[in-house]
Amino acid sequence: MASLTIRNLDETTKQALRLRTARHGVSMEEEARRILKSALEGTQLSMRLGSHLRERFRAVADSAFELPERQTPRKTPRWDESA
Image (cartoon, rainbow, N blue to C red; front, side, top):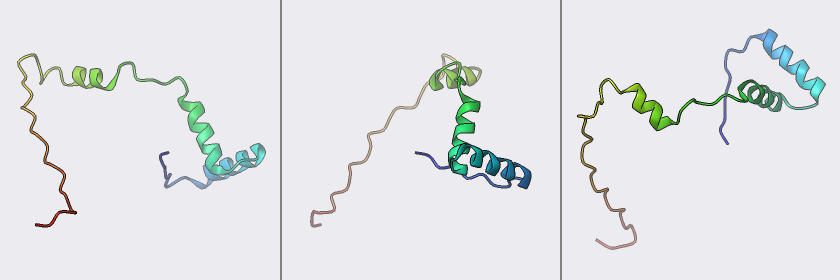
């Protein structure tokens, strides 16, 4: 699970969150998760990431654009072998 720190939260908002958590009987952290989940419910990207990037860079990466050849990755070092 990801972790999130919220800095510079004004005292009024913090107090409102504290009161809301008391009403719901949960921690401030849990209440913040519920609020974020509720606010973002139904929000989705209209297209997948690859399609979004392709569309975003269409002007500079047209059909003539060639990707560089992939290089073979290095082999993992064997630490248990003597030199």
